Length: 139
Image (tube, rainbow, N blue to C red; front, top):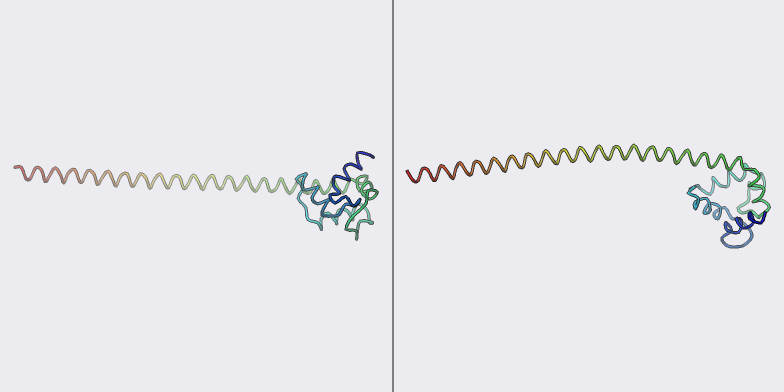
């Protein structure tokens, strides 16, 4: 129970012997579990009805919440599913970005090839015109 009290004190940022919803929310965020205050309140209410209208809880309520971990497991599973879905979307978007970048690269290469061809044609035409004017003036 002593280590649980230490954890409680770490979450209780203002040291008033109560954990407010925002302090719990902040502690969850440190564990990479982003959640809204309303969600935290709802999950606490599912754990025990005494949390229903409470904006904070003491050590005894904290211990009650820990002993009824099924709801916390559900919260973590829901957040994990959400994170996995976000990762899938990010991966899909990354693929879309890579394909778009490839298309832009191809378009740039075609544009560069056309420009090089145009420059080459202009040089050949200049060379032909210069040869024609040299040949026509000397004969």
